Length: 170
Image 1 (spheres, one colour):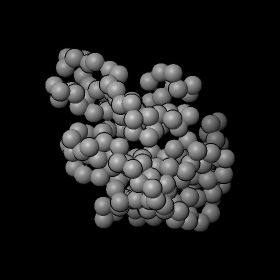
Image 2 (cartoon, one colour):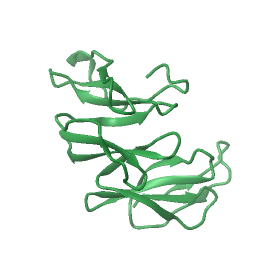
Image 3 (cartoon, one colour):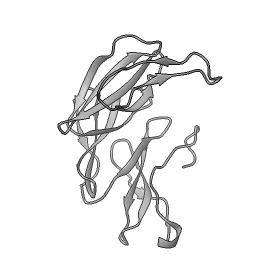
C-alpha cells in the first residue's frame, strides 16, 4: 500500500495523512494549500479524495470512470484516461465526473499528461508516426493539438512532460 505524508522542506514536521490498504496516487495540493487531493483506482474507476494537509479524515469529493492523471491548477478539473496502455482516450471533467470531454481519440498512448501552470494547456506524450513517444501540447478544451518534440529513435522518447513554473518551457 501507498500512504500519503506531509513534511516540511527542512525535514521537520512529518505527518502521516493516510493509513489504508489502498494505493493512493495522483496527489496534489489544493490551490489554497489547506488540503491534499488524491485518487484511489479500483474497478476501472478513480475515486477522488480531499484530506486536510495537517491531518484528519479524508472525504470523497468525486469519481471518474478511468485512471486519474492530474488535477488542474484551480483544483476544479481532472485529466483522466480510459482504455489500454497503447490505446488511451484522455478526458477532462469536473472532479465529480460531470461535463466529461474526450480529448484524444484513443489511437495512441497519451502518457504523463500535465496541466500548464495557468490551466490553459495540457502537455502529454504520444507516439508519432514512427512509434516514438513525443511531447504534444493542446489547449485545455482539446483544440490546437501539436507535436513539440522531434526525437530520433536514438535519442530515446518523451515520457513525462513537466511545465516550467511560468509555463514557457517543458
